[in-house]
Image (cartoon, rainbow, N blue to C red):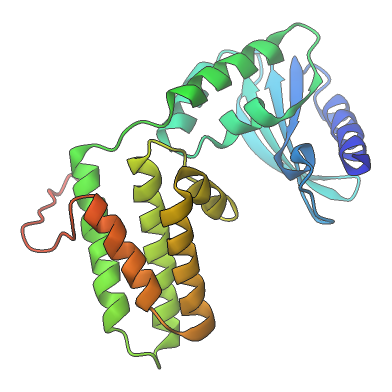
Length: 241
């Protein structure tokens, strides 16, 4: 709680100093959720008047790195649509789960409500072409993973990483759930499917710790079975320059 209070004060001073015309602001990320470490960034979303411009900035404030998500009011609906299309909803979750810092005109409250409605709708479904492409790519990673010699640890680890990412993309899409990258990949994966998600993560860890691809391969085959099976011959992808 003390860390959260300190971070809130830092964020308020940052917004007041850099954006005196701000219409409101929200503190998000680990500091807002009580999961901060000693090196956690300040993640701050700031609503700007329409005379400004939307952008993202990274600055250092009072010794801490701060990531700033800056949006004008007019841009918020389009930006949220773009954030949803990415299937990660980074800024959507920041507004939904963050701590309001200032909201003198009620714009933050209305923006948070829009974020919640957008998140409740879920990410857009994959198209048939995207499903086929995902199955094909994951099948390729699976085949290469099981065919790679145990001595080729660099290749084995790279393939395990790519297989996990593609599997997470498809498994979250299967559940119409949000996905993530970095530390949010395992969080979103376990949230979408605790059983299959954990099997994929444990399989990936087994490759890293013991050089054994079998558990990850089993988890990937299980997922592919749910999605229609591996896809090799018969796959076609048009070139769209």
